[in-house]
Length: 515
Image (cartoon, rainbow, N blue to C red):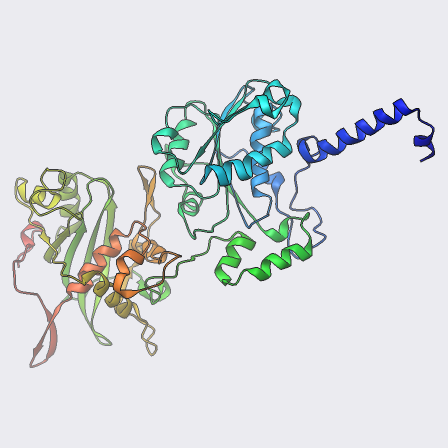
């Protein structure tokens, strides 16, 4: 105080100006003082939770990095710091390989709420004015083009999930950053934009929509020339932010009543918010080692046909059973995007030597066995039109068959408490790592069943069941549902009951067996 008192009025005015500028910089140019949180930093408010590892996220050289976090867990700040450093040319990792100017894109679900309401505010708090074009936000930001320009020529353009998919094309980018859940097709467009410049991608989000495509991507990254893409991710918790008050966090925690939503918003977990459509499904019981089928098994082939996405083929058999009288065994599944001739070849090769009694198929909704909604021959009609006709019968789908099939699956997956078995068995070979086809994972049957959930905002109203189910690439489940819904015929004989076929044709000519 004595030193201040000894200053002249002019010196006091200059000192006050400097103090005001330093205070402004602490709130508006925080990159000058930013120090990333490390997982090893002490956490004064929640010592049982390690600090969120901003340092690891920022320093990772991975092609795609993701921070999945609860609310107020520093995940958005991590993305803002990473991209601002890169644009300014001071990123400790990426600026070593690419110097400014660099060109990037920031995407979020809503422009007003997310882009302007959160991310642009974050940039305003972080970026020094001297690093902005013209030395100020007013000159650096263009609302018309939704672009932020830096003094060195680097640019960031903002897009939202509300915009048409066509707006995501065209540009060559050095990076993209998606903050919160965005449509998968727009993510894939962003991935295509970084190819030419060998750029990178960032994902930061809270799993408020449940187990969305982002979880699939980081758990099953696509392969490039047979080598998985380098994808790295971190989970941030609200308790891992050492700058939040304990009282504030506890108040927010108390406001969340749904236990699953609490895990998503507090811990950043990818929880299944919607609930399982078939909660009776128990992989520990229903998945069994591959074995020989019963000598009296009745085999069925089923294919769910799709022209633009992978079709799902299933080989199953009705078997006599000591516990349930009869059960269903799924012994082979394939999911591929193939032409009809390619499918015919693979089906015949896989079925060679097997006595398959019935061959079923289902067309995309809106198609018939003859003409598709595109005005061309349907897939089933193409099978019949080939040399050596391949006659796959369209399954019958009476009104109510969708939820009727779901009810049967629930009943058949129910575990018998005395024997710890269910009436559906799935061979272990039917569980396989998803193959990425056109950028999307083609799941195996067990994975489809795991992901078969109700939409989070809706309840399991059986009258409108189809509309309540979140569609998640469930074509093998469709195969299984059709087979179970049609069911076998059981014929009583003098020696008991046996499985018989419905009246109709046998198509064993395709497999070299006789009916």
